[in-house]
Length: 203
Image 1 (tube, rainbow, N blue to C red):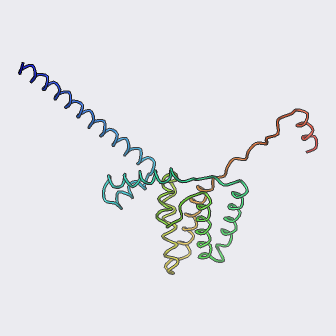
Image 2: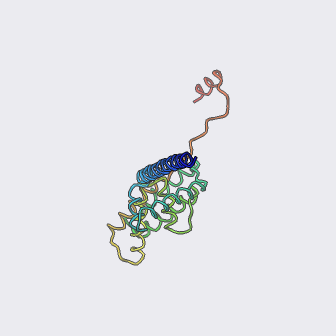
Image 3: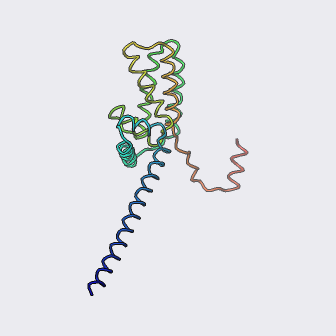
């Protein structure tokens, strides 16, 4: 009877051991897949987070937290007329660069922040804005960081015209990426061949 119980115990322990090994293997596979996904989504921001936080685990926890925060935001595209207005404003400020490089840089920063606010991004501070952008626009967040760094130096009078021009170019890359316009809704008027031909004849 004792031998029989010992055999059952050994069998149970063996099964539990296999289950533990399988669970650990599944967890390791999940972590590896998650790391790969985060690297692909965040690009250079992934390596930057590791350098900044000191470990892969902390960096991945931060990037996952960014994803959760952005999921809670209500990000919306711009109405077509607002998108056109922003595009016009950018062309106007860009045209003033030769006469006022530093002023153009200030205006570029202002216009980008205004665009972000209207889209629904958090506006608390630069790092929070950059972190939110990195989730869906990882390819341009480095442009934002570079532009911001030059803008800070320009505020201290520590830049030249070429650096300011580069900052405006960086802002333009971010601006183009964020200038998402909602599609124009089709007319609710039902299609009618006679009405359509009449409207075409008048046009």
